[in-house]
Amino acid sequence: MIKSKRKFPSLPYFWSLIDFSLPSLNPYKGKIARAQNIADIVKVAKKRVPKVVFDYVEGSAVEEVSYRRQRECWDRVEINSKVLRDVSNIDTSEMILGKNVDLPIFFSPTGYTRLMHHVGEPAVANVAAKKNLIYGLSTMGTTSPAELAAAVSNSRRWFQLYVMKNREDSLSVIKQAKDSGFEALILTVDTPVAGLRYRDNRNGLTIPPRIRLNTVLAIARKPVWWLNLFTTGKLEFAAFRGWNKPLSELASVIFDPSTTFADIKWLKSVWDGPIIVKGIQSVEDAKEVAKLGVAGIILSNHGGRQFDRGPVPLEILPDVVKAVGKKVEIYIDGAIMSGLDALAAIALGAKAVFIGRAYLYGIMADGEAGVEKVIELMRREFVNGMALSGSRNLKEVRATGAKIRS
Ligand SMILES: Cc1cc2nc3c(=O)[nH]c(=O)nc-3n(C[C@H](O)[C@H](O)[C@H](O)COP(=O)(O)O)c2cc1C
Image (tube, rainbow, N blue to C red; front, side, top):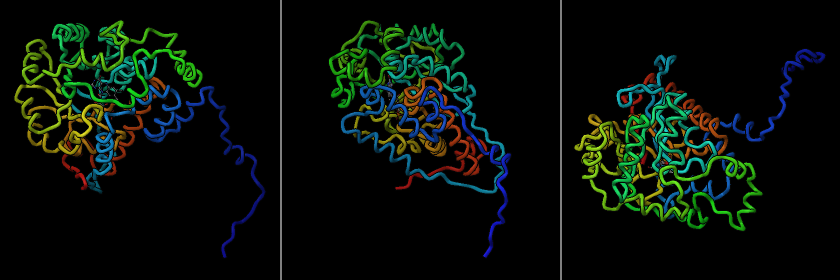
C-alpha cells in the first residue's frame, strides 16, 4: 500500500492558503459576485424588490403556458459540434443594420424599468453603451427618449412604439425619438389588446404603487427599495406623465385593436429610418412585413405576456430565416436565460437575440452592475459554447447549425 510521507506543517505554506476577505456591507454583493448563471441572479432579485414588482417581471399571461413552452424549447436545442478546429480566437461580433456590435445579445424594450430599480432605463442603456450592444427603449418607459439620450448619449438606441388609438400620440413620441437620436423604430404588433395578466391583477399592480394598509408591511420587508422610491424622481410613464390608474386602463389607450399592415406603410411615411417589427409569430406574417420593406423582424410573443396559446417563436425561426432571412434581419426573444440559448438561436439562423427578464433580474438584483453581470455571464457561456462547438465566428456558428429535438 502506498503511503504519504508526513512532515512538520510549514507555516509559510499555511499562510499562503489563507483567504479571509472582509464581508461586504451589502450582503447581496457577494452573492452576485459568486453567481454562475442567471438563476443565481434571480434568487437575489427576488429578495430585493417587493413581490408585486418581482411578479410583474416574472409573470406571463393567463396560465403562463406559453412562457413555459418557450423555456422548455430552448432546453431542447442541440447545437452541432465540431472538434479539432483552432478556436483560440473567438469573435462574437456581428453587423446589425450596417454597424458592428460586440455580442448578438440586446436589450428588449420593457416598460416601467424604474419600478425594478430606481435608476431604471439609463442604467441598462449605459451597459449597452459600455458593451457595444443595442438598447430598446419602451413607449411605456419611465424615462423619456430625450432623458435617455441626455443620460447616455453614446448608446446605440432603438425606440419601441405602439400604434396608439390616437395617431397624433404616436407621432409625438416618434418625433421625440427622432429628435433624441434614436436609430430605429421597433413597432410592437402583438398587442392589439392587452394580455390577461392574472398575477398583476391579483397583486393590484398600479404605477406608481399605491400605499395601502398592506403596503406598510411590504415597506417593512423591502425598506431599501421603498426608500429609493420615495427619495428619487417621481415614478411615472415618461410619455404619459400624471397617469396613475390601473395598467389595464392605460393599455386601452395605448393599444389599438384596429391596427393592420397598412399602419406599417403609414409608419414608413412618417419615419425615414429603419423599422423593426416585433411580435411576428408566423412565416406568413413574416413574408407580409418583409414585402413592406421593414429592416428587421423580432420573432416574439412578448415573452408569453400576451397570447398564452401562441406559437413558440424558436420553433418557427428556421422557416422564417429560410423565407425572408436574406431580405430582413431576423431576431428572436422570449425566455432566453443563458448564453447557450443565445448561441442556439444564432445556430438556427437568427441574426441576434433580445433579452427582457434576464436583464431585469440583473437590475433588480444590483442596478447597473447587475445588468452588467448578466451580460458577462451570458457572454462567458456564449464564448465557451462557441469554442466547444468548434466555431470561431457567428458565420461558422450558423454554418454548423443546430436542431430542436422533438
Ligand atoms: C416587465 C416587462 C415589461 C415589458 N414591456 C414591454 C413593452 O413596453 N413593450 C414591448 O414591446 N415589449 C415589452 N415586454 C416584452 C419584451 O420586450 C420581450 O419581448 C420579452 O421580455 C422577451 O421575453 P423574456 O423576458 O423572457 O426575455 C416586456 C417584458 C417584460 C418582462
